[in-house]
Image (cartoon, rainbow, N blue to C red):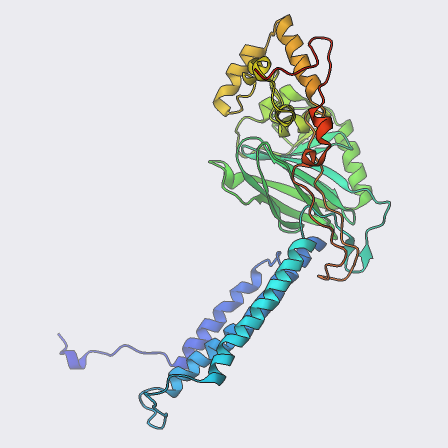
Length: 430
C-alpha cells in the first residue's frame, strides 16, 4: 500500500479551462425555440418586445451592481495592502445619490412602460393593426371563435361558419381574431404562444382575447393552468392558413360525411353538435383525437356559458336578471330547485324537472318573461382599439367600461313590472 505522501494528487483544471468548458455548454441553447420572442402573431410580438425592453431596463442596474460586487471583492481582498481602510466612514452623499437615484429612475421607466402596455395590450381590446405597417381596415370583420375548456380537451365553435372542432384550431392569416372563452367545470388557461398571451377560462364566466396571426404555419396551443389528471394531454393543434385555404377547410368540414361518435374516434366529421352530443363530449376524457362537427346548435355556447345545457336548467343570466329586479319572493321558490350547478347535483335536477306539470310550466314561463336580457347571452365587454398607431403611445385610449352594464340602466325601467298572461304584473315579495 502506498504511503499517503506517495499517492497521486488530483489534477485541477486551470480557471481558463473551466470557463471555456462552461461557455461550450451554451451552444446547446441554440436548439431552443424562442417562440415567445419570435412569434407569428403581432400581439405576441408586441408582448415579446415588452419583455425585452423590461429586461434591458432592469439590466441597467443589475449589470453595474454585479460588476461592482466583483470589483469590491477583488479590490478589498486580504492580499491588497494598499486598499484604504476607513473604519469611521458612515456617510457619502454622492454614493447615496448613486445608490437610490438610478434604481428610482429605472422603476419610474418600468412603471410607465408597464402601465401603457397593460392598456394597449389588453386582451379585451380590439386590435388596431395587422402588423407594424398595416392597420386594420374599417370594413374588416373579425373571425369569431367560441372556446370551451373541457375535461381534458378543447372545443372550438365557429358561429359564423356553423361548425365546431375538438383539439383543432384553424384560423386565417392577416385577419383579426376574436375569441370568447369559457370553461365547463374548472378553471383553465387558453394559451397559444405563437398568437398572444394566455388568458383564463372559467366556468360561468366569459373572457375575451383579440389577436392576429401574420404568418402561415402550424403550432401547438395548450392549457397553462393545472386542471386535473388529464392536464398533461390538454393540447390542441393550431393551423394558420391563407384566406382561401381557410374557406376550403370550412367547406370540407361542412360537407364531410359523418363518422365516429360524438366524442370522436378519428380525425373525421362527427355530425351535429347539439346539446345531447355536447353532454356526451363534456364527460372527462384524455388524449381525444381531432374531431370535427359539420353543424352546431346556434344557442349551444350561450347555454354552456350560462350552465344550462341540461334540460330544465335555469340559465345563470336569467337568475341574474331576476336578482336585478329584486327577486321573486315566494313565487320563485320552485325555481331555486333548478339552480344546483355543482357537478353532483345536476342529475337530480334533470330528473326532477324532466316532466314539469302544467302549473310548473306556467310558472317557468312567467319567470322567463321577467328576464329582459336575452337568456343565455353575455354582455360584450370588448374595448375599441386606440386611435394612435404609434407603439406604446396610449393616445385615444377610452375609459374602462362598467363591469355590470345593467347598473347604468334607468332604475325606473328596472323597477317596472312585466305583465304576462299567466300571472299578475306585480311581483310578490312576501
